[in-house]
Image (tube, rainbow, N blue to C red):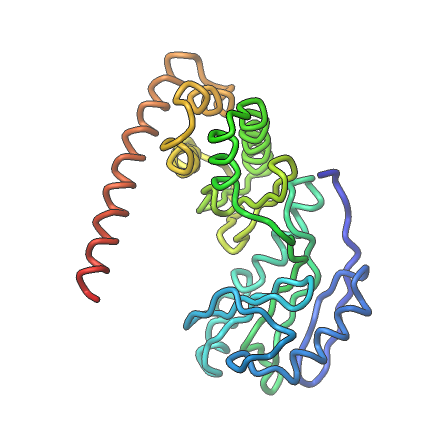
Length: 272
């Protein structure tokens, strides 16, 4: 993805304030009309629910992805007063990523609903990537059909995206294959931008955490040597001996991560 600057505007009314990508101005007005009349828990034909939790509702309206916080009024006000930057994280990180050439879905708007001038609920909207799946699914297809060149190219693109994040001091705290989408195995999009954190420095500990997440996503079906090569390429500042030590640390942490996942899953099943 080439670097771009998104021109944004802000509008404030009695009921909300919105920052929006000027390119989508007319579409956004239509979306706001839909939101005003929307009951998320009824079968509205305009809306496809993606995920509903106590914290947020994620949905698709036409070609738009939206994430809407779902906190009670006073808890929402409290969160926005104390955690304003975190609430706006998806929006601000999206703008930064586009500017830096990091492939993410194009951000459309960020809206805060107001109660007597105080924000209590927010809505983040971005383009919806149609027919997309996560890169783990594509990697399995490439392995199954023996398209190893395409698999290698896709992994190298993941390496490039990871390197871009680190070079701009951005840490994605859940950099797993499930948070990288693609429609063709070539063009990738980083999602779950709530999990991205701005850092003064990306430490070796941070890098090992990301490498473990990525390794865990592919190690069950991708050749070990290819994954090792990808990890090495993300550590150019280290000599080969250090790279080997980091690589074995990643493998050790992945086993621990998988063990914890299985243990937590078993506990949840036993609670049913």
